[in-house]
Every structure is written in C-alpha cells, then in structure tokens.
Length: 281
Image 1: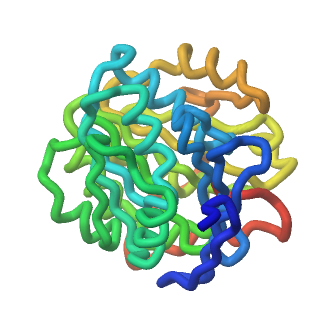
Image 2: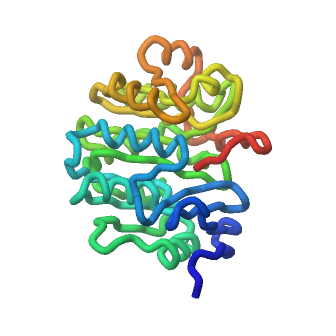
C-alpha cells in the first residue's frame, strides 16, 4: 500500500485529513474540518513548519540546559509535533500527551507512529479533567495547544484552569499556551490578566503585525514563578523566517490594561478566526 497518499477519516470531533508534503519525503499535514492542526516530518522531528510551533520550540530550548531531559505535559495532541520535538532534542524526557479525540489518536498512531522508546505516553481524555487529577509538581513544562476546530475551549481559559496549571508545575516550571486573537484583543487581554493573577512572570510571543492589531494570528503566552529568559527568546524569535517579538514587563501590563481575570462561570471560547486568516497549527 502506498502510504504517501492522502488519508481522510471521520474522527470524534470532525473530518480529519492527512496530506503528504511533496517537498519533504516524510512530511505530513493534519487538518480537521479543513483547519490546519499539525505538521510533522517523520524523518526530522526537529523541523517545525508552523510559526507558532517554532516559537514553542524556542521556549523548550530555553527553559533548561541544552539537551537536558524534561518532564513535559502536553494538553492537546494533534499529530504530536511538539512531543516528537522534545524527544529528539532532549532524549530521556518523560512526556504525557492528553488528547480528547480518540479517533484522531488512532489515526495518528496508525499513520504517523511514534518511534520506539520515545518516552511519550498518550492519553485519550479531556485536558482540564486530566490536569485536575494529575500529580502536583510533576511537570517542568506544560504546553497547552488545545483547539476545538479553530477555537480554544472555554473551560481552558479560566482562573480555575490557571490554578490547575500552577498546581501541576514544579517550582520554576513554565506554562506555554498557543492562543489566537485579533484587535482589540479582548480574549488575549483576559488570558493575560487571568494568568497574571496566578504567576509572577508573564511573556507573550507574537508577530509585530498581530501585536499592532493589523491581523488575526497566533500568540504564545508564557507564565512562570521564575524569571523567563526573554532576551534569549527574543534573539531566537527575531531570527525566524517570520520574525516575532517578545513582550514582557511594562508593555505587557499596558496591553492587559483594565482586563479582568476570567472565571469558569464567565469563560468563553477564543474568537473564531476570519475566513482564511491563518492556520492554527
């Protein structure tokens, strides 16, 4: 059977499609209901095709000494792009991936299997429910990349959720979330306010055009009780094919403005992107 042909399958939360990349022998794009979700290169798991994924890669590169193993919890699985990256760049890491779509997990396991001994455990479960039952202080890094279609689910946006992330992280651990918004940034500002209530240190990575409100796009939110190496991140993100800016301190406080933390009772999903605005990743 030719495994380089497109594969379409109904999964729990929509219609998934795996499409081969004609430019990379083992490159695959995963879409769900037409929205790009993940890109992986089975031959080179360090290749991060999507801009937001490259920024998460920079975060992972900067949180500890190069090559040192980490305990990482991933909320949202997709095609397991970031877990594969950690396994390749930080051998010996222990990783848990939580993905609610069992059908998607089965498709990825069948068509894009993990290499033996990767140290990646995949769990079919709701991200919030798993987080609230996870062992306290068990993760060095928590990466949240959960989208229902092209929107972050409401129950992963509240102060109660932020407290659950803090509970799972070790002292000095880092929370990193892939978010999406556009001007006037009501959702993004509320997320910053919510995590500022729980963590002393915040940073935001996004393209200048997104930060200036010129277009809808991804932004990576970082939160920690320890200082975030924003200088190292700024150098790396500035050198990307699509350079990004790292905001922290006073500019970030100005962006938050009068935004208030979100409670479970008031939480809403992130906004729907305009047609053709961008790929979630």
